Image (cartoon, rainbow, N blue to C red; front, side):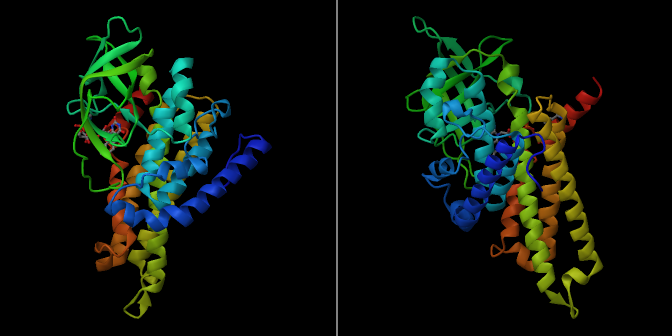
Length: 377
Ligand SMILES: Cc1cc2nc3c(=O)[nH]c(=O)nc-3n(C[C@H](O)[C@H](O)[C@H](O)COP(=O)(O)OP(=O)(O)OC[C@H]3O[C@@H](n4cnc5c(N)ncnc54)[C@H](O)[C@@H]3O)c2cc1C
């Protein structure tokens, strides 16, 4: 698929060059490492290496040292990285859309000065902390309380618990959503190198295992207020969901590519699998659904680039791409037969990784709720 329709020729060329670099990075480094990363975790230098190819500052203006690209190019990058390693794609989507998005738009000049450059260069790592044991889909239930610290203007003590926070065990700085009154929530910058931040055991997950899915307690943890409303703080989920949709698309594309190749070389009943009608049905359905998902992601990203409201478009892209990804990876295992159940073939890993895309940044049921509300308003 060609890159951009609304970009200037110069922007088009620089984004095309960026994506060529990402593709090479995925082929040379990400894909060959994916099994090893899953057995352990993303390596310590992974984000520095991502920064070298421009993957760390995709939402950050050049004046702050970023590589600000269109949303179309950001989605393309998430898609390409997911073809190599979905866990890395999920981390890049969360860091770029949610964390860096917040640092760029909702911080004071002083806060940007302190954190933005180091984050883009991956000298510090980031995470985004909304979910809690009792606040998942119902994000407004957040019970982490923020209390002003007397004599330190702009600083608060945070007390509460967070869970399922991507990269939370490695992050130097977490954008934390917390309650400032019974009715109001806001966001805070919290450095993790302090006694009030008490990291719990890493949460093992069936998919995206290389990612450090974390849980932690906050006991009078000191945090710097970024003056914003709850709605502003979660507004980054629009581009975030498009990134997860692109991740789902990349997983589906990779699984489909592997399944098609396998079906063309495996013979049973003296014919190739791809010559059997049931397998052809699998292939045709996957091909069509992937194409439809691609168009929805592309449409949402283009709308974002034109400055339009993507609430419905991002939810539709994420919902359709994530469910497609789960169907396609399931079919890919079926086409591989018994071998699909083994750890020898990547399709089993893609099937496990795909599940996250139906849950993270809002489960499918919440996406349906968002879409219906937009239709019926
Ligand atoms: C690997 C991973 C990484 C994550 N990374 C982050 C992160 O970086 N930062 C962060 O803040 N969070 C993160 N999350 C949390 C994620 O966003 C939540 O898990 C998700 O929003 C669902 O919340 P929950 O798990 O509490 O499920 P619940 O809210 O308890 O929902 C459970 C199920 O109930 C159903 N349900 C819930 N509400 C409704 C409804 N209104 N209508 C119909 N059905 C409903 C759905 O089927 C849903 O799947 C991550 C999660 C995972 C697994």
